[in-house]
Image 1 (cartoon, rainbow over the protein chains, first blue to last red):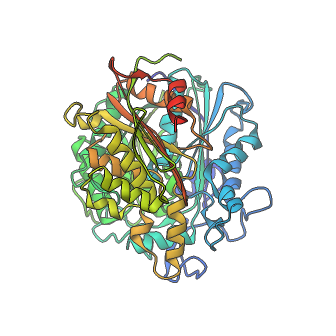
Image 2 (cartoon, chains in turn yellow, cyan):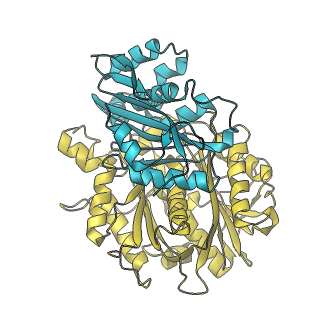
Image 3 (cartoon, each protein chain N blue to C red):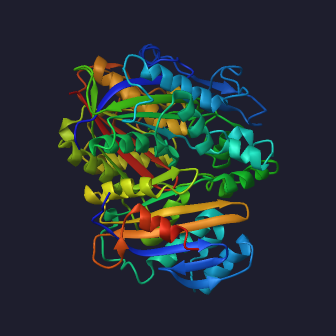
Length: 373
Length: 203
């Protein structure tokens, strides 16, 4: 892959509205995950990372989902010098459920269905900034965010565009909370990725943006060095038994980045804290020869932000490279999977190359590699 | 842009008609639920998991059956060298509505799992043992040029040797599938937006 640089980013979560604020909070050990008893979402207790109830409330023009995307993109564009109205820039969005809350009270009229459609939100965000081209919208379950970054990097690498603005968002709603509860996949307390006593995931809401360009603005800009997607071809809601498919995606990403397993300094795992995901991921990491590399999961800080998760965690990983610090994995005490090197405290050490992984329903897997220039 | 790849097979399912490479295999006046089941029987399928699927997955699964039968030898390519790139306008809204209705009584995990559009990719991959690159795009209408850009890249950069790509969309009574098998070869028609659009609108 030809050089593609990250020249701007944003994190918009319950921990802050900028990347800098979020990373400072993570270094201080703050978590956005709180326990909720909210009958409007679920009759059962759940733990999630959410904005205050009145923040970003739907208005006449934009829903909460669209406001998060717009706010995140606006902040990320600052200081990049990128003009969204320029013909060499493409907008790529990712989400799983978008405006699903518009339907949850049973209004399935044609205007409401149209208002709730993901491409309608894409058109509103496009118009807000004045992007010239039709945006791409990726909805590939929990790998949506990483798929969006990889798709943008490839379009730039192929010379189709000079810049790509890539943003993802998802909300915590009755729809997703009851859905994951129906799978017995939600933990009622802060989740514990890779731990022996893990009992399931937390959900989270937020948005994140990365801006990719064929030209770097500074020597500190991170490079997207390689990436790959795969499918388990095994089960639509349960991960691979062997981890070979995610493991193959990791190997392909290393190959594209022209790196060896020993070159990777940190893994930002998907780490959902479900029994099956974490075991599969540990197997995949072993399969790819990366068992010794310090690894974290950020789900205990942000919950699982679904279609935004890949972007959120990629942006945090890039801060780890730029600041030379690996964020620990909250909730982790005793390893409960095949051997992997889970970070349990802040590690101040050079981080030059990061592997970011994700997997999702449908059996999909993603592996991306970010490096220092 | 000229592509070095070929559309070696195509399948369109729309308005009660199933066609492969332009030839009609089935015409029916039934509504979507009965039509999908009738198509399953007409094609002589034996895949009990079909009955558990939502309509989006049933439609995409059936279209892939028709597309690949006698057109792709299962041993021709290694699993990681075949991928699936799909798009639609209505994401999983059809399944979303069914799941929302279920919450009132009992939130159903069997319905919830289909509330993601890329599940149909998973179903096709499971059936045909495809393990390569996969993407699901949401578009207001079929964007053949964008599809060609994505699939061309995956083939040209040797991420894939063959790709099943196209459109699978369901909302209530309305549905349309248009799948294309794209690979290197001499048989078939050139893989470009013009040819895809022509096939897409043929029914």
